[in-house]
Image 1: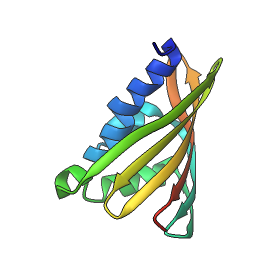
Image 2: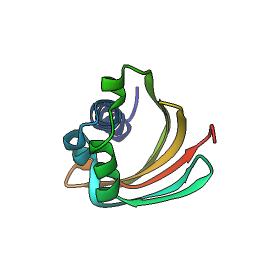
Image 3: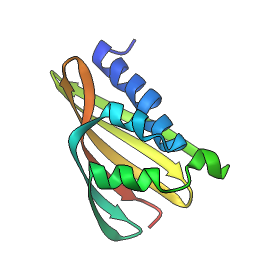
Length: 124
C-alpha cells in the first residue's frame, strides 16, 4: 500500500496533470501547478524555458491530443516524498514527442502542487 502523500500525488497527476494535458484543459492544469512554476529542459534538442503562463497559453492554443484523436499516454515512473517536498518522474507520450519529466512538488495548504517542471524529449 502506498503512503498517503504518494497516493495523493499519484491521484493529482492522474486527475489534473495527465488529464489536463490530454484534454488541453488549463483549468485542470491550474489545480496542480503553483502560479510561479518554471519549466526548463529541451525539446527536439533545443533549449526549453517557459513560465507557467507561457506554457498554459501554449496548451490553450494547440489542438489537444484528445481532439486530435492521436494516442496519448501518461505514466508515473516513480514518486519520492520527504516531508512537504516530493519529486515525480513521469513519461508523457503525445504526438511525435516522448517526454521524460521530473516534476518537483511542494505541499501547500494540504495540496501537492508542481513548483518546477523539467522536461526532455527523449525522441530528439
